[in-house]
Length: 314
Image 1 (cartoon, rainbow, N blue to C red):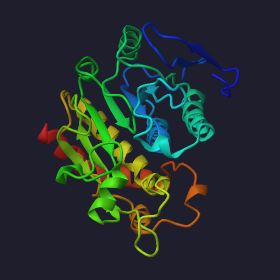
Image 2: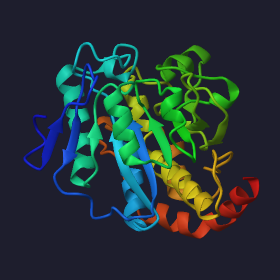
Image 3: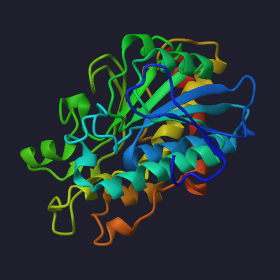
């Protein structure tokens, strides 16, 4: 794959009509034997932010969790079935889509994590997923529907992160900004839900505090891409807290899907202020965020009661 440098090898998987496996030549130094193994299905800026969050959690406790693999969209191949025109990719030029895709792939490969960019309902991918042996799946901005075979491959469940209020029936589908403008609102939340074979369905198990996605005048900006930049800051916190709850659940000897994760309790004050602030005029210059000391301090200091509640809830 052009632009990834000499440290990656490219493979085509059986049955795939588009995409390929990008495998790092060097295995990750964080490949710890009994770690909780998670696979991320994600794309676009929001998927990249989720990737950074999982890698940050992994670096803090490599014996506890390991990112076994990443599955992402191929927004360049015209016949890739990822709802290209209906989703945020449709707001970008082809060179922009390629740059966004390559940035995510490079982040994973540089961390020693393999990335698959192709069709998932194929014999080749099913074998790959079996090799990765995930305990859980997390998705964020992924364009293909996970079928029953994939969902049942993970003993601790599959979870989707979606930037609308799914608990109250708002914004399911590929265009969350359309839901907001139709309702005349400029706030949203991230919802985490158990996954089913229907897009954005399944029980909601946690939500972030409200996120202001309006400008200083209280309007939703005309450039819809600004929505996706404004919802980036809490993603790292969200996936770290979700992953930590799953790790602790497994440590308690529990299996099956997680039924609750509190994404508001213990959220760092600085992060809350970022959620409340309006979209900045220079939003497009903001980098993909990565969890920092404030998030890690909050995770370490506030998770003990949450872990007890989750273990008790089963």
